[in-house]
Amino acid sequence: MPFSSLSRDALINNSTIIDNMFITDFMPSADEIAVKVYLYGLVQCADKIANNNSLDSACLALGVERKQIVDSLKYWEQVGAIRITKENPLEFEYLPIKTITQKPRKYNADKYQDFVSQIENMILSRALTPNELLKYIEVVEDYKISTDGLLLIAKYCVDTKGQNIHTNYILTVAKAWANEGVKSVEQVEEKLKEMEAQTEVMRQVFLALGLKTTPDFEDKQYYIKWTTSWGYDLESILYAAKLCKKRGGIKKLDSILDNFYKLGLFTLADIQKQSEYIEYTRNLAININKALGVYYENIDTVVEQYITEWLNKGYDANGLKMIATFCLKRNFKSLEYMNGVIAELYSKGIISSSSLQTYFEAQKQTDDKIKNILHTLGTSRMVTNTDRDYYNTWSDIWGMSDEIIFYAAKCGVGKSFSFAYINSLLANYKQNNVKSVEDCQKITNIPSKIVTNYNNSQIISDKHIYSKEELDNLFNKEDESNFDF
Image (cartoon, rainbow, N blue to C red; front, side, top):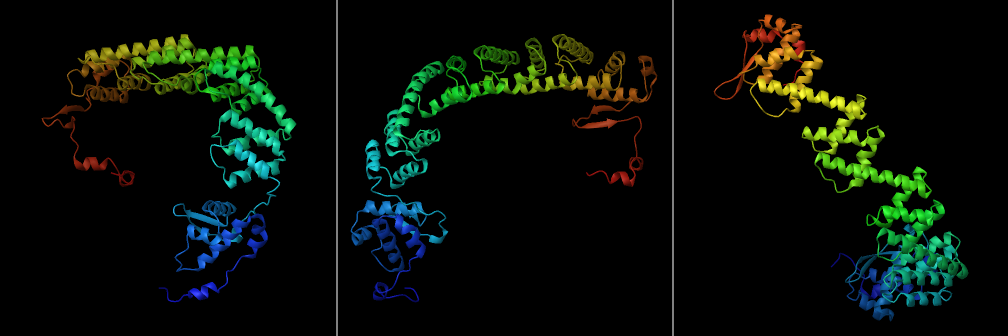
């Protein structure tokens, strides 16, 4: 029991405050039952202890059916005056009238009674809500379409889509035609003849696409765009449709024609030439995938992301297959890796098949040299990219001749971590600016050797063992501040 409350008699004799905005702006547009429901609900809100505040008690009090109250509440919710918070059992709450930004529109019920009745009889699969019927009237009012014209449009849509058609579909068609100036009965009838002619044409397009469904309004809108806005004839459209048969339907065809339009291809001859190029790139993508030993389900994506760019850089089919084979031999089976190789080759100006052949022969010669080094060290393993990086550093960056490199390899025979030993030895040669094997033989300052102790842990042994003081003196205090261990 609350601290204070009104008695039942006081509640009955009390007053209910009604916002003037409701009376002036909203009540005139609402029907009689909707007003009754709104006002009765307000009275019930004030009675905190009533046991008869329910949908059934409201039906008895107002003498109306449940559906009438539900429809009224949905109307007020559409207006923005209430919010339905629960469906079963039905519960709602009132919202401030002053927060409603758009006033409800008022229509003459008698004027649209026959129209609404015919719309309802046309769609018998379900009952139309008051909000749906209101939308039909709003389209008539806003777009100045005749009611008979809208009924013809609705019948056309129902015949095309069936009884389960949504109101928004019908109204979308009506608005689109109204924007084209199709509003009267005569204009709608003429438009329907045009749409019937388009239906026959679209059946040919659907057949070329491998589709068995019936063309609808959206499909015909595509055709209008292709022919009217873009200027394509039926022959060109059918040719493009065959290019994407059973691959994406009407939207894929629209995408292909959109691409042709952007490329400025309008005649059948131009489209055929471009389509031959498309087929060429698709086949090239398939062959490159085979050369790499990979499989991509969506070839068109491969063409868009890789093939087109590579061809634009000047590479031809033969050159791309050579690169793919090169990647496969390096055991990198991916388009991403191949794209990286092409980027590097392009930066060096290696594009033509002849220049690629020369480059790959040089790479093979380098691999053969590395194999000789591995054979000298007593191993028959495959050449790795790390081996290639080492060799390129020794040869291209440090400037060591093959004779010096092989001499260092022979010195590394039997050594633990032989490549580490060779690296250290060649670095020592570089520091001493050696130019020949004879110069190497004169160097007595042998670099560090890596050995393995009985615990398999790595230790470094040198000719000279540095003391802690000597090591500390290698860095001054200022240098030490730059290191974060």
